[in-house]
Amino acid sequence: MDAALSILVLLLVGAVLLPLARIRRARRQMLAKLALRRGWTYHPVDSWQIASEIDNTCLGAWGHDHACCDVFSVPTRSGSLWLGEFTRQIASGRWRRTERYALAMAHLPVGCGGIADLPAESLFVPTDPFACYRPVRQPATPAGRQVWAERPTSDRAAIGRLADLVGHLPDSAAAEARGALAAVYWPLSHRARVRDVIELHRAGERLLRAFTPPADGESP
Image (cartoon, rainbow, N blue to C red; front, side):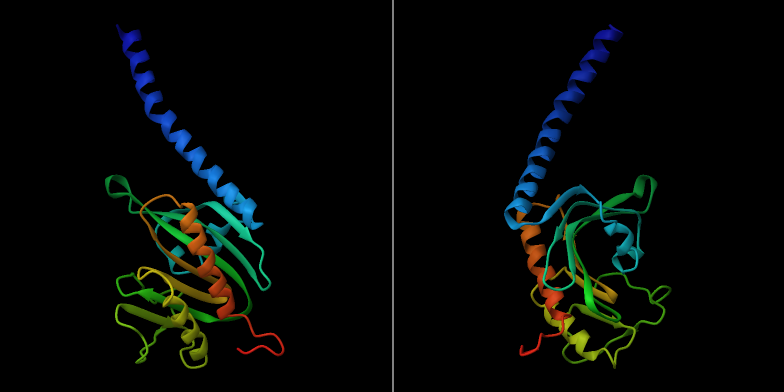
């Protein structure tokens, strides 16, 4: 009886896990095809250590067990751009939960002081490594947003460019720039899909354009 029960449990577990594995494989095949069509490089795992770099942003300041998966490296004319899915664990034990984000991260050709343009409900505490951040209060800041910056006066133009970028993103999106690192991200209720990656790519391209000096003869 015990052997029969064990076999039955194994069959039931297999019946659940096998379809999930097929769905995961099919999703990754679609993402790989997207990369092939666009001339990008796709890795199911975080081969570029994106999660470690995000630790220097507000997104990476909270939670634990940060991870990235389904990461794309996108060639650009200026800077470097990666797209992917970022997860972090909040709390522990019975209260533990996973938060998932669509993430576009860029290495900027020209860096700036720390800036964070966040939804009003986002948790932000100006302590290390953000102890030098100050709230930015200006008439142009839309309702439902909070903006913080290390150099609110000297980086006013960069703050404006980041605000303009956020205006093209989902309401739940956040944008950050710090030194040569910049990122845009928004919560996901599901695993990243092809349409999420395409939307991320648009956001990442806008992010790079916002911080790329115009070439000779081009308008800023």
